[in-house]
Length: 169
Image: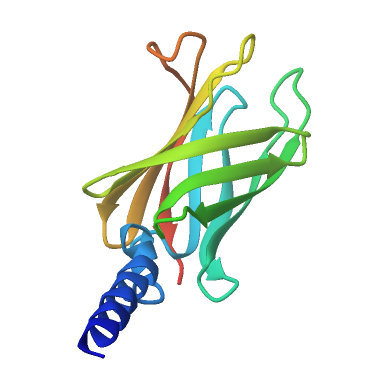
């Protein structure tokens, strides 16, 4: 009887540690959760937009929605960019993967790493396709820097667009 009780206790502890507290998986994202508005510049020109991060499906995923507008400039027509990114938990309960979709037909699969006040998303290596890096850096409680970069070799990255955003909510 004591052996059964012991195994039941061990099994319960394993289950509790595997699933953790709801929302605790998103601790590295807490500063980025909310609604943001910003401006930036890069290859598409000077522009502005909004984005938001929020958990969904009982905190099993994080959803980012983004909308940006780049006005016409010389020979380039005005551009509107909308995208959706879903960050998911792996089997250990860590948000380590994301998938990105946009209105231009792109899909990017990312792996995620963390450092203090920074979240880095790096695309998978696919032959003949650039490698993308998306970095969010906390500048202060109400401001983040977002940088989207591309590389052909995964070593030398060139900034495609970068901007600062202020927290709205």
